[in-house]
Amino acid sequence: MSATIHRIGARSEPSLEPMIALVAADMNLVNSVILDRMQSDVPLIPELAGHLIAGGGKRMRPMLTLASARLLDYPGKRHHRLAAVVEFIHTATLLHDDVVDGSDLRRGKRTANIIWGNPASVLVGDFLFSRSFELMVEDGSLKVLKILSNASAVIAEGEVNQLTSVRRLDLSEERYLDIIGAKTAALFAAACRIAAVVAERSETEEMALDAYGRNLGIAFQLVDDAIDYVSDAGTMGKDAGDDFREGKMTLPVILAYARAEGEDRDFWREAIAGRKISDADFAHAVELVRRTRALDDTLARARHFGQRAIDALGIFPAGDARDAMVQAVEFAVARAY
Image (cartoon, rainbow, N blue to C red; front, top):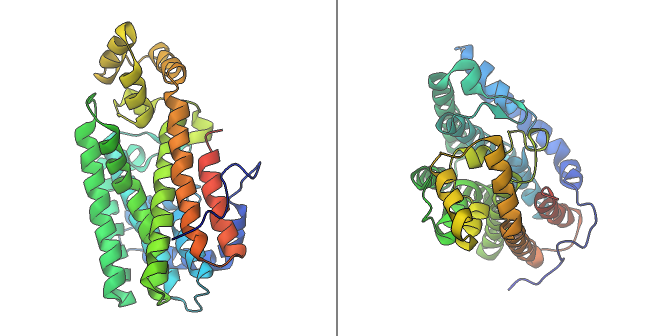
């Protein structure tokens, strides 16, 4: 049973910098693997893959693999290739997601599907998935292969689940949490857990890292969904209101609709059906999620899952690695403020 080792909000300005510094040397080795294994005799593949991989993302998921290995004092090198696997899986899902969502902006840059078209984006995503499985097989651990391949399947299930829930006003908070637990948190959990496998640590430590990653992933996605109603393209890397215009039933909308009455309820029905998507309509939606405290409660849930992630680290000894992983949670939650 883990103990509470830190309360969210105790630090005024949480930062991802301690984790970046902690894993900097390892990340250079991971980047070398990524650059090497995304190469192909077909020029479009490294060109398109490089556009997204070099697109300014923080590489949080592979950093979690590296930080977890540091937490466990793992002295080997297997985690470098496995962190690259995590990044390839993540990048492949982004390429596919942008096609499904019809996105035209990611991290402030034009998406690959806008530049090269949907077919190329899907196929290069498939290439990166294939590369990730090559690296898993080369690692030689059936347990690592099982964890990461299962995560890949769960992510796909979560994306399909979300696709079938678009414009569905009857989506429950429980099903929404199932969706983000699959499409986002599964890879966070796997990224952390595999470090314990390669370090040959106990099942208890393995599942503690799984819990850390899973709860961090849920908190991360809750904040992302809240940010759609509080931020702008410069902060988000996508246009504010994209989720609203696409009819996605994220938690702020689920809560706001459940608490709405009369004309406000009618507004949500029209908006989620795609009949109210103007800038003025989005401004009204923002006002409603604020007035009903749907935004506040979404962020409160993010803090709850963030605290669960931090508590999961309670079985590990104090030190730079644990502190950096705690601050990573605080940073993920603080992005919306």
